[in-house]
Image (tube, rainbow, N blue to C red; front, side, top):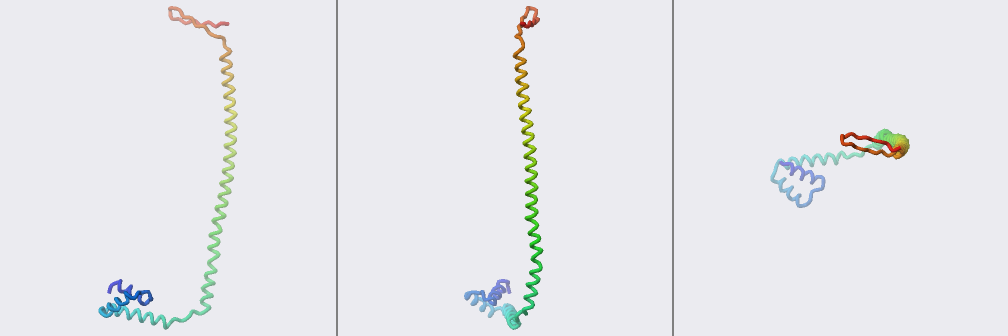
Length: 151
C-alpha cells in the first residue's frame, strides 16, 4: 500500500474526502488486502476514541489557566526593559550631540577670529610694501647691476 492510499483513507475518516475519490477508495479496498487492513485499523482507532470521549474535569481547566497566568509576568518584564533601554540610549545620544555641537561652535568662532587677524596682517604687509620708496635699476656694460633708492 502506498502513502497516497493512506492519505485517502485518513481523509475519509476525517470527513474531508470528496465523492469522486470515495468511489475510488472503495474500489481499491475491494482489490487490495493491505488497504483493507489499514482501513480496519483506522476504523477501530476512531471507534475507540469516540467511546472514550469523556469530558475533562473542571479542575483541570482551572489548573491549566492558572499555569498560563503564572508565565505572563515574565514576558511583560522582558518587554518592559527594551523601551527603557532605548529611551536611555536616546537621551545619552542627545547629550553627546549637544556637547559636540557646542565644541564645534567654539572652534568656529576661533577660526573666524584667526581669519580676521590674518586679513589685518595682510593689510599691514601691503601698507608697508607700498610705503617703500621706488627703486631705480641701472645696468652697465660689464653686467653689474647698480640699485639706487630715490630718497
